[in-house]
Image (tube, rainbow, N blue to C red):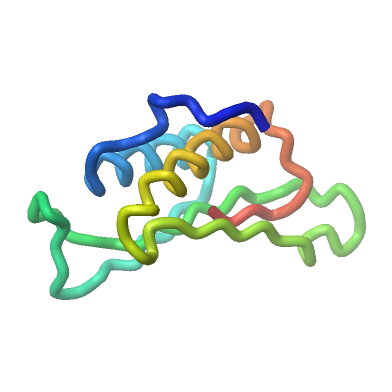
Length: 106
């Protein structure tokens, strides 16, 4: 994978989440939102854990036994780097021309 582009990095949770959701939608992902009750971002926005699933092509029998799982933002500030990596991953492996071979969860 090529190096991460600076445009993938964000200055806030709200910006990072929007970029992730936009990239996931563009990649044709299934999206699952898990709301975090009684918590707010520094900007006052509701917090959530967003799950994006790229439905891989069944290239062989039992292909769905393979799974790639990448998480970020579960501990704090390192989430910005993880988010940038996820956005680039979605651009490369999602969508019609993506290089998917198995089910991906980002």
